[in-house]
Amino acid sequence: MPVRPTPQSGVMQIAPYVPGRSSAGGGSSGKIVKLSSNESPLGASPAAIAALEGLGNTLAAYPDGSSSDLRQAIAQTQGLEAERIVVGAGSDELLHLLAQTYLGEGDEAVISQFGFLVYPIVTKGAGAQPIFAWDKDYCVDVDAMLGAVSERTKLVFLANPNNPTGTYVSEAELMRLHAGLRPDILLVVDSAYAEYVTANDYAAGDRLVRDSDNVVMVRTFSKIGLAALRIGWMYGPAHIVDAVNRLRGPFNVNRAAQLAGEATVRDVEFVARLKAHNKKWRDWLTSELNRNRIRILPSQGNFVLALFEEDGGKAAKKANEALLEAGLIVREMGAYGLPDALRISIGEERAMRAVAKVLKGLNE
Ligand SMILES: *Cc1c(COP(=O)(O)O)cnc(C)c1O
Image (cartoon, rainbow, N blue to C red):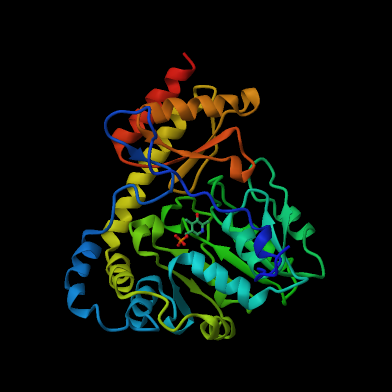
């Protein structure tokens, strides 16, 4: 072997991330509808688009390094303290920063069986080991999560609701998970889909953050219209905010993202419209498809997971091909260890009716 630069060992253990596809390939003709990345079902807030209009005049100057206007807007609308918020270039950046800050060689992070794929990436990137806890029928099992904790555990990741399953744990279960952790273990509650949750026993985690020293809540704008701009935020105790801010790049969030984020946070009506649209079509798609030998997991997100439990993955592949043929791009789930599943983002009415038509047609 020639002598050459060597990545730190954890990095080469990372399986390359495969994003949702954005073209349908050869087969389809006509309009392509992308339902593979859980973006907003109704585009961006008009206020966010308008907010970007003045941007040209300011391109030569660095953005506000602490995103203070955006933090103020989040704090005001959500009833939080601005000093305990950190804004990131997508919540992915914040997950990386948390892992880099709290994990190192020899440490372990607990992740649920079908937890978000970014968690093992950031864990290995920090030189630590991901430890997976079995789900119970596609839902995070708090007892299994607690059972996976060892003396080496430094961090526990919980996506709630979870991507890609769409299932969630109740506030009582979240509290039980937290109560079972040693105080030196950081619990990262990733509430990326909180804006879409309709269950009334759910909590996004802000109260738990306020009442403890070892919890952070991570949020994103990617699912409410700003995926292109890469912007997310976290809310945590002062000591964690201080540590993360030391490692964070001084100008990590660009001005366009800050402006559009602030406008979106303040456009309460838009976010409410997204939620209502999503609930309507999530419920509709779930009940349409559940009747047709496809199992749709009950979802609290802006997507559903469709399980084709017969044929060990062949039925899912066939369904995916039929959807692609109709110009509908959904997400294959092999990378999550779910070859018999397809994840379908909630979109506009026309797209939802088209998905239902294709999938029902398969079983006739
Ligand atoms: C989409 C998603 C995110 C958001 O990532 P961004 O970097 O903000 O786009 C975070 N966590 C989960 C579970 C997600 O599904």
